[in-house]
Amino acid sequence: MRKKLLRDGANELSYEIRGIVKKAEILQKEGKKIYWENIGDPIQKNASMPDWMLEIISGLIQENSTFGYCHSKGVLETREFLAQKTNTLNGVQITAEDILFFNGLGDAISKLYQFLVPTSRIIGPSPAYSTHSSAEAAHANTTPLTYKLDPENNWYPDMEDLYLKIKYNPNIVGILIINPDNPTGMVYPKSILDRFVEIAKEFNLFLVSDEIYANVTYNGAEAIRLAEYIKDVPGIALKGISKEFPWPGSRCGWMEYYNKESDPQFNALCQTLDNAKMIEVCSTKLPQMAIPRIMKDPRYLPYRMEANKAIGKRAEIIASLLGDLPQLTFNKTYGAFYNTIIFKEGVLKQGQSLTIDDPKFKALRDDWVSEDMPLDKQFVYNLLASKGVCVVPISSFCSDLVGFRVTL
Ligand code: PLP
Image (cartoon, rainbow, N blue to C red; front, top):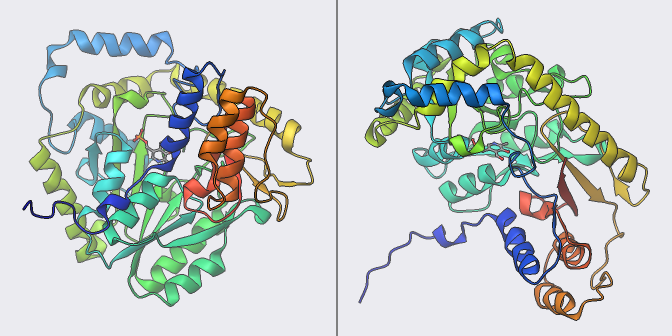
C-alpha cells in the first residue's frame, strides 16, 4: 500500500479568489460577457508598462550579463541601490546584506513561514490578502490568527482587538501589517503605525509590513514605510514591482530586514532565509537588473503620479455610484487599487436571488449557489450569472464580514 503523502492539513490549502474566476470562465465559455472587476493584475486590467521602460528592459536583454545566475541574495548593484533608497527615509539604516530577492512577493510570503515552528504565529489583518492568511494557516496547520480591520472606522485596524489577542496568546511572535492594504484600499496614519511598534516592543514581537502598494497612493495620501517608523524593533518589509511598474509577470519581490542584530532569534531567521535562497541558487535576474535603471529614470516619478491619478479617478467613480447607498458601508480609498464594500446587517438574506433570463446561466447559478455558502459568496455568484460582473466575496479574504472587493 502507498504510504501517506500529504502532511495533515495540507489539502486544506486553497486560494478562493481563483474559485470565482473559474466560475466566470465557465459562463464566458457559455457566451456570457464578463466584466472582470476581480483582478489584481494591472496588465489584465489594461495597464501597460510605458515604452521607455520596455526600452530599458530590451536594452538589458541585449546585454549578455543578464543571462547568468546572480548572487543568491540578488544582484548586488540593485540591493545597494535599494538599501540606499531606504536609508534616505531617515529611519533604519541598512546595507545590501539586509536585502533578499525572491521570485515574486508571493514567494517571499510563503518562504517567511517555512522555518518558523508551527506554534509560532504571526497575527495578520482580517480581511487580508489571502496569500498571507493561507500561508500562515498552512504553516500552523490551523485557521489563521487575525486582528480586525474595522469598516465602520475607515478600515483602520482595531488596535484593542489586536492588543488583547496578543496579550492572551503567548504563541504570537510577529504582527503583519499590509499598508496600503489589499483588499480595503486603506493607507494607515502614523498614529496607528506607531501603536503597532509599541505593541511589538511590549510583547517582544517582530513586525512584517507588506508594502507592495507603497507607491500606489492617491487622494493626497502617502504611505509611511516600516523603515520610517519601526525605531529599534526587528522587522521585515516586503516589497515588489508587480503593481507599481506594473510588471507582475516579472515574479520579482524582495525582503528588507530591519534591526536584525537586535534580536539573535530574528537574526537567525533572516540568516536561514538567506541560506534557503542559496539552495535555490537565486531569483529571477532580469527584473532585478531593471529596477535601478527604471527607478532612477527621470520619467519614473511623473509616470507613477499619472498612473495613481487615474486610479484615484476610478475610485471617485465607484464612490459616486455606491458611496451613498444606505444598505452599504462604503469607505473612500487612498491606496492600492481595490475597494471593499460591506453589506449592512440584514441586507442580504438567505435564498435571495437575482433575475437571470437565460436558462443556461440560471441553471449554472442554481447549481453553484447553496444555502451553506457565506451570503456574500451567494451574492457574488448571483451577480456573476445575472450581470456578468465578477467581484470577489470578502469571505475569501479570511473575514466573516459580508461584502465584496471590487478592483478600481
Ligand atoms: N502582497 C499583496 C498585498 C498583494 O496584493 C499581492 C498581489 O496581489 C502580493 C503581495 C503578491 O505580489 P507578487 O506579484 O510580487 O507575488
